[in-house]
Amino acid sequence: MKNFWVLFLAMALLTACKNTEKGKTSESGVSIVVFIPGVLAGSAIYEMLADGTKKAAEEFAASEQKSVAPTVTVIEGGFNQAEWESQITTLAASQTYNLIVTSNPSMPVIVSSVSQKFPNQKFLLLDGELAGNPNVYTLRYNQREQAYMAGYIAALVSLENNQGGAKIVGLLAAQEYPAMNDIILPGYLEGARAVDPAFSVDFRVVGNWFDAVKAAELAAGMIRSGATVLLPIAGGAGQGAVQAAYEAGAKVVWFDTNGYAIRPGTIIGSAILRQDKAAYEKTMLYLKGELPFGKAEVAGTADGFVDFVEDDPLYLAAVSRTIREKQTQLIVRLRTGELKLD
Image 1 (cartoon, rainbow, N blue to C red):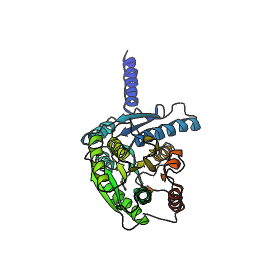
Image 2 (cartoon, rainbow, N blue to C red):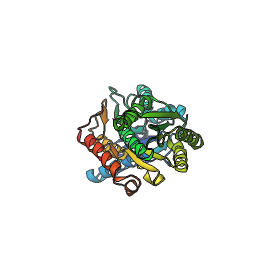
Image 3 (cartoon, rainbow, N blue to C red):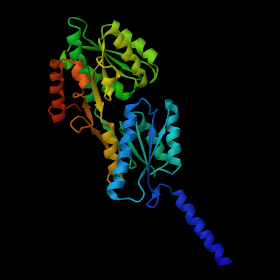
Image 4 (cartoon, one colour):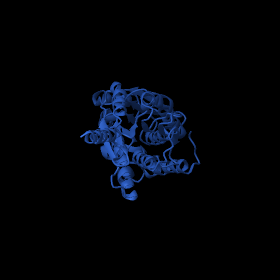
C-alpha cells in the first residue's frame, strides 16, 4: 500500500510539471500568441500579422513533419491603449506561450516593462524598435521611405490636378507619436518637396483611431485650405477622410495596405508594409531556433518589406501614365538602393 501511494504521488507531480510547462515541451509543441493592439476587423495590417504567423506555423509543421504543430492563438487588445500593458502582462504571467508576437510603435515601452517582470518570456515585435533585450527581437520598417513615396505621388497628383493652385498636401494622423512626428511627417514633406520645393504639409490630428466623423471634418477643412491630396494615417477614422475627399473631388494616398478598392478613383496611391511577409519570415526563424533575440533590425524597400502598389488595375485607371512613370522611377531607385533614405 505504501508503494502505491509513492507511485501515485510521483505520477501526480509529473503531471503537474507538464501542465505548468504547457506549450513549452516537445510533447505539446510550441505555443504562440499574436496580440492585436486593437481589433482584427477592418485592420488589414493586423490581419497580415496574424495570417503571416499562422502560415509560418503551418508550413513549419509540414516541412519538419511534426506530430504536434505549433499552435497560434490570436487575442485582440481593443482600442484602449492604457489596457495593453496589463493584457501583455497577463499573457506572460500565464507561462502558456513560448512567443508573444505583436506590432505597434507603442509596444517597445510595454514589452520592455513586461520582459523585466518575466525574463523567460520571448517576444517578436514588428513595427517597433528595442535593442539589447536578450528576450526581444524587433523589426522596424523604414517609414521614411514609405512616407517619402506617399509624399512624392501626392505632390505629383496635386500639381497635375491643381495647376496654379496652392502647393499643399495634407496629412491626417490619428495621434501624435514619435514615429509620426520624427519620421513619417518629415518623410512625407521630403517626398513632396522632391517634386517641388515649394510644397508644404497641412498636418492635423484626430485624437483617436476611430472617430470617422471628426476625421471627415478635419479633412474637409484641409481641402478648403488648398490641400487636394490627403494622406490619412488614422485607422478606422481614415474612412471619414476618404469620404470627405470623394465628396470634394480631392484625392487620397493610402498607407500600410493596398487601399485602391476602398474608393476607386479617389485613392491614387498605396505605400504599403509587407507585414505578412515580416510575420511569416521572422516566426519561421523563431521556430527554427534562428531568430536573433536582442537585435533590432530596420528593413525597407530594398529588403522587400516596404513598397508601393503600382500594378493594381485601379491605380492604372486612376493615375495618368506620366505620373505613374515618374513614381516608378522613384520606386526603382529605392528598390535598387540607388536612393537611400536612412
